[in-house]
Amino acid sequence: MGRVNLLQALAVLAAGFTAGGINAIVGSGSLVTFPVLLAVGFSSVTANVSNSVGLVFGNVSAALGYREELVGQRERAILGGIGTGLGALTGGILLLTLPEGVFETVVPLLILLACALMVVRPKPKLSHGALSHHRKIGLVAVGYAVGVYGGYFGAAQGVILLAALRFLIPDHLQRLNGLKNVMVGIANGVAAILFVIVAHVAWDAAALIAVGSISGAQVGARYGRRVPDEALRWTVVTVGVIVAIVLIVK
Image (cartoon, rainbow, N blue to C red):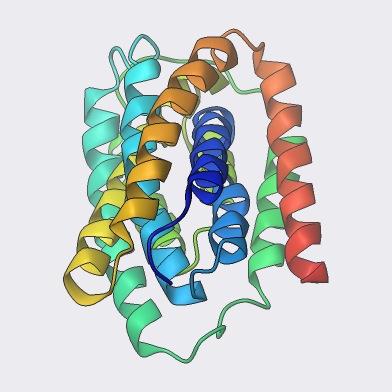
C-alpha cells in the first residue's frame, strides 16, 4: 500500500491516541491500532512492525506521565528494564525465526492467568524500601519472561506484567503501573529497533501512531493516576478478560 489518504490518516491518528491512553493505564492498546492499520490496507507484518515502532513513543510519554509514581524506583526500573530489554530481543528473534502463530493458542491462557493473579492475590504489607536479593533476581527474571512474550506477540503485555509485578513487589498498584510503563517501553523500544533493522516500516503510519499515542498517553496518565488502586485492579482484570475473549474468538 502507498501513503495513507487524509481520512485514513485521521483514523490511524485517532487509533494511536486511544491506544496511548489505554497503554498508560492498563495495556493492550495494540488491539486498537493493529486492526485499524489492517483496515486501511497494510499487510499484517507491516502493520505489526509499524505499530510497534509508533507505540514506543507513547510508552515513553506514559512513563513520563507517571514520573511522580516512579520516584524511588530507579533500581527497580533498571533491573526490570534489563530483563524486559533482553527478553524483547529474544522474543523479536523468535518472531522472525519460528513458524507464525506457534504460541497463539496459549496466549489467551496466559492473559487469563494474569487476570486470576490480579483477583486472588491478597493485599500485601506495602513497602517502598529496597528489594531483597531474591526479589531483585525475580524482577529481572519476570521482566525477561514478559519481554520475550512482548517481543514475540505483545497483546496485553502490560496486563501480564502488572499482574506479575503486583505478585512480586509489595507496593501501591499505581506505583507498579508506573514501573510497568517503563519496563514495557524498554521492551517495545528494543523490539522496535530490531524491526527497523530487519523489517519494512511504514513510516507514515508509524509517525501518525507516534503522534497520537504521545498525546493519548499524557491524557491517560493524567486521569489514570487518579484511579484508586482497587478500581485500577478491576479495570486491569476486565480489560484482560476482554482481550483473552477476543483472541480466543479470533
